[in-house]
Image (cartoon, rainbow, N blue to C red; front, top):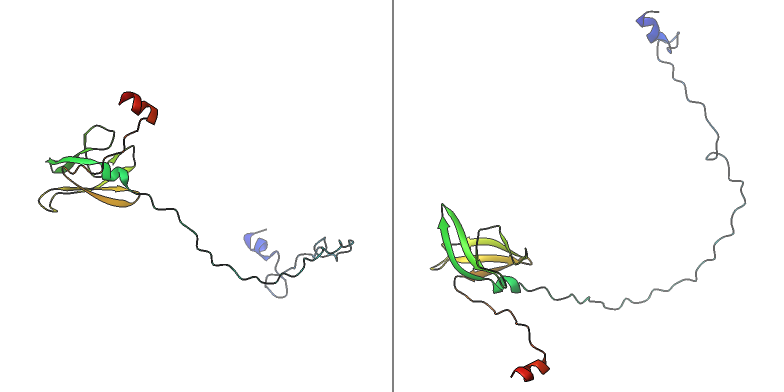
Length: 158
């Protein structure tokens, strides 16, 4: 058989058109009527009348404050090779050089910008909790709270 003969298989000889055959119809569980005994209807709940909705205003917790960023002390700004760096002293850490993109205070404070031309003194912009904090050079900032001695030890030492 040549290629043409293979192509003619499935053609209706009198029409020269493809002969379409519908697949045989199967009757299965989906087509059969449900003859199984039906389960008893579930007991219906008593009707519920609509109740007025009380005024509800959720109380949101207070937003966190950027206390660590405010406590960072900036002691200087230097420009070396076209790169600006700040000398900072985070609370409970040693003084060090940082650049934009560095993190302080165990990754909690981001050095966002160092503004050299913002005024007479450069300003370092820090970010904590999405809040920007401007720290000028030499500003001490708030003092971190010190641990207090128990009252019985204060009397013994004082």
